[in-house]
Image (cartoon, rainbow, N blue to C red):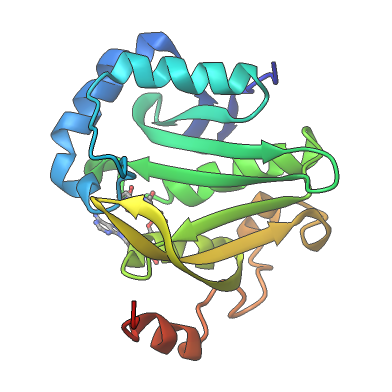
Length: 215
Ligand SMILES: CC(C)(COP(=O)(O)OP(=O)(O)OC[C@H]1O[C@@H](n2cnc3c(N)ncnc32)[C@H](O)[C@@H]1OP(=O)(O)O)[C@@H](O)C(=O)NCCC(=O)NCCS
């Protein structure tokens, strides 16, 4: 079992997601259905579960197996979303993937980039992981801003990569390796030291993603 820490920066806190978050999570998901739907991972079999408690439990089981870190995101002490570190691989890969969402009313306060920076610094500093990845649909402007702010490097276009809102969707992939942020992601961002353009999608990649596929 990997210990999941509570980490705070300014008004933003990330802490372990708990079973007693069920009610807040359920309320946030129902109130933000249309806000979240187009970015939500779906099951290719068509099966949809509304078992919020069950979903927290399965994230916790995954965490106990050392494969993930399920965080709740708080703004001023209120539950406003989730940040999930998933697919943790130790050893010669030393990597993991980050996913996130916040409620519509919490959007625009810099909560997510702060949460991502805190989680990434924890994964590099305490877990000893080497590479953190974030994958985003080309259409998701607000999420692309999150990686741009933090300077996650654009790595490429993954065709039909994740099943989102009922279909396999293309994603842009971004990553950081520990060596490029020796002082931490949060500090680099806060001190305005993110290399200009590092988190941007190159124009040719935007053009490629807009091209329709022959299959
Ligand atoms: C993407 C998302 C996580 C960004 O989180 P956030 O905490 O609002 O991040 P920020 O405050 O840094 O805002 C990022 C950008 O969102 C946009 N934004 C700000 N307020 C907004 C609002 N009320 N509504 C929509 N977009 C908004 C702005 O472009 C902002 O960039 P800016 O700060 O340069 O103006 C959030 O919009 C969200 O949860 N969306 C729905 C789920 C989702 O897309 N998850 C990610 C899948 S990869």
